[in-house]
Image (tube, rainbow, N blue to C red; front, top):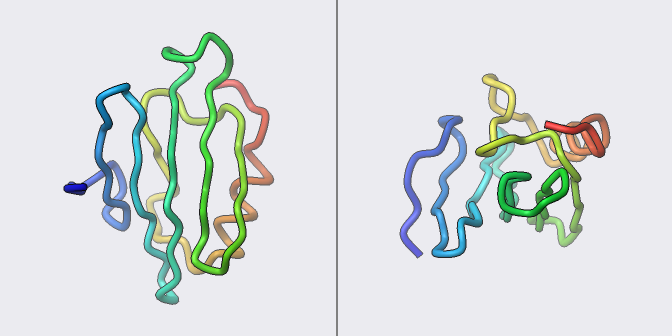
Length: 94
């Protein structure tokens, strides 16, 4: 899959034929997470994002993102920072 620049400089993404955004988030410490995001515009609910992290964990975040994945401007330091972001924003409607 060809990945291109995403909203954040530390994220690369592709838009799949069905409208799913898929990509990779690179943390400052060298860890990473793959993700798959479906917008609420395509799902009929608040949408959601699956994260498959380089430490083997998976997380799901319902809602928060609207039309694309937009993370903090400052690059996330680690998977722990990403996990904290997911916990804090899970279930919040876009």
